[in-house]
Image (tube, rainbow, N blue to C red; front, side, top):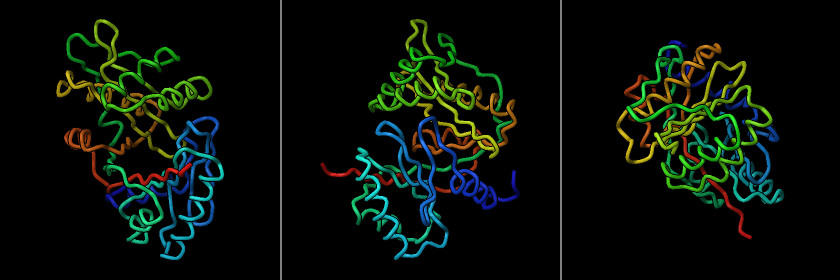
Length: 266
């Protein structure tokens, strides 16, 4: 890894944000003035992933207004501005709120060596690993997500089915299932060719199986695949639930990121 956390963060900003790649089929990445955004359909993730480091107050307000106009014109149900704590200007979050964006729970940007985190996926007795390779598996994965996080899994289902059908080569999805085939945890990994980074997503475990190593096992499984394919870094935007686990597993905190979401009024 680079010698300092700041160097690692700079590398992440440059390769994963400024030069972001689409996170799936049917979406595109655009650089519009001082921001980089992803654009897709109503069931895809749409939002700003990067803003220029020297962005000033006037430029920020203009860029925010432009993204609201863009979102509204496309008829999107929501649009996210992914704000990192080190982005400028310092009051960008306040400016987003003033324009109608709503801040969701902040997440911690964590990074680790894929090689060091790779290892056997050791699950507690009664559970087994099941790779997700088709629509039926994606449905189970969405059910695990709903049970773990208490949120609607329909958008996740759409994205995973689409990814598996159209661009599976840089995507990994896996579940832990019990003896009845019921999913108790699921996790995804996006591989970003040419960046050295593999992004970890999901990983939520249903309440009855938490604290028993299920999350750690799915992490080891994905880390091994990333390392085998030549990726140096694992990256996660961790919730308050998963961040402590990842820190204990050797992940380094590079900062925080907060989703600011705009939902046009109809």
